[in-house]
Length: 102
Image 1 (cartoon, rainbow, N blue to C red):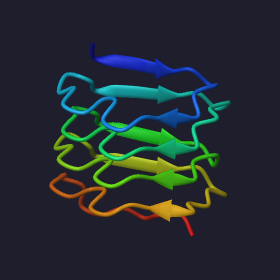
Image 2: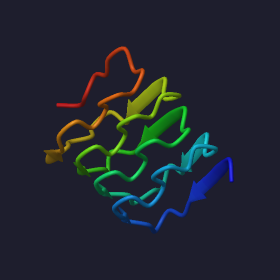
Image 3: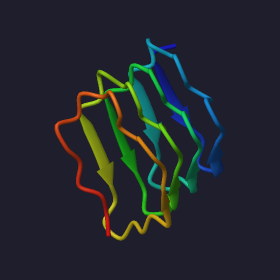
Image 4: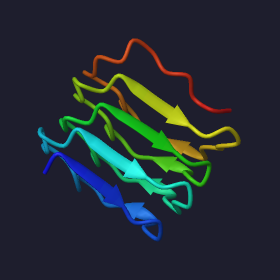
C-alpha cells in the first residue's frame, strides 16, 4: 500500500497503526476530517512524505513521526490548537524544522 485516504469520521489513529509501513508515501485527510488524536508511533518508520492536518487535531503522541526519513512537509491548518505534544515526535526524521501551531 502506497497511499491511503483516512475517512473523515476517524477520530483516533491508534498506537502504531502505520508503524513500519515503509511503502506508505501518501496519507490524505479530507477537509472534513475529524481526526483529533494521533497516538504514539502512529507513523513511526513509515515512508510518508507529507502530512496536512485540519484544525481538529488536538493531540500528537510520543514518537508519532519518529524515523520518518522521507517526511519533508508537515502542515497544520490555521487555528489548530494542540493540547498535547508527545516526546520525540520527529526524532530521527529528516525534517529540517517544523513550526508548530500555538
